[in-house]
Image 1: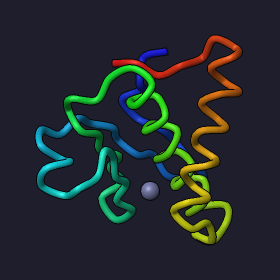
Image 2 (image 1 turned 45 degrees about the vertical axis):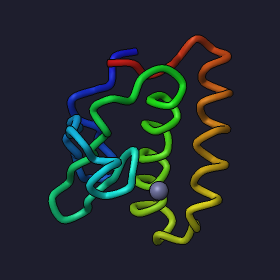
Image 3 (image 1 turned 60 degrees about the vertical axis):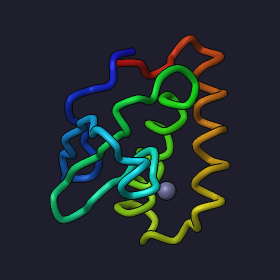
Image 4 (image 1 turned 45 degrees about the horizontal axis):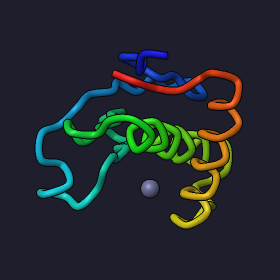
Length: 96
Ligand SMILES: [Zn+2]
């Protein structure tokens, strides 16, 4: 599915956007910022890396609003890979 322009979670709606040179400038393929309600992705991402990066930021979003920000980064990575696999096997993947 096309990456939504906004992703709601709890009572919050986050806007998604692609950013040039995010990896070079920040070192992240994606990032979520609570106070601006932005989810940003490196502009050059595609395929499975883009898909799992979207799941990664959604996992952070859910963790933030429903789990008191309790997951460490490695756990977020594992959860994102799991969501990508389970939903991918049902034919649901994110793309631009
Ligand atoms: Zn992360």
